[in-house]
Image 1: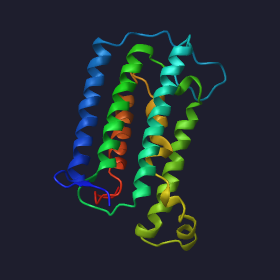
Image 2 (image 1 turned 90 degrees about the horizontal axis):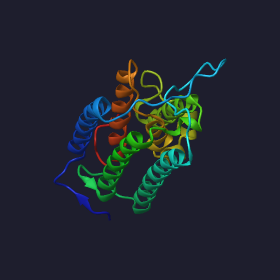
Image 3 (image 1 turned 135 degrees about the horizontal axis):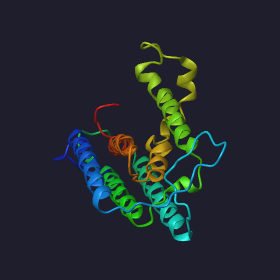
Length: 223
């Protein structure tokens, strides 16, 4: 039986995660005004309909290593925690399991490191992946969540679809946060100008959902 921390409820931890997202986003705004420097960005090629503008014009080995190193480290740490949690087969509880605390800490650490990496080397994953990959990762996430929630909420107006229930048996073991959030987070950088507000909104959303998915195997409110 896994140990739990009962003096901190999962709902309280989730609220703290939301508060962290808002405070950290405000800190990013301040950093962008006073710490981050304008960068020479890669111009949009002719004939490319979708383009992520915030890419360095001259990336190098270090910029790529810093971006991909943090992304892989983030994924591996969360994958390991999910594996450890499934191996222990814990009971659902109102408190936090040790792996919930570890997941919250890991996400907070890698989000902070990503900001530092952006301030120093700027580039994210966009140099090596197409912009649509982030969009499709969200589509896959929504598709899988619909399958997972079919048995509890139904697919259409509470009506459950039997073939979806049968197909979702193995899908339920997939941690939702791994489907897209790590990819989207490490794709984002901190732009200047008119797109700043949009990026802040995306960052807040990604951070809040990441916090929600960190309290797995608890009785926190369902999404």
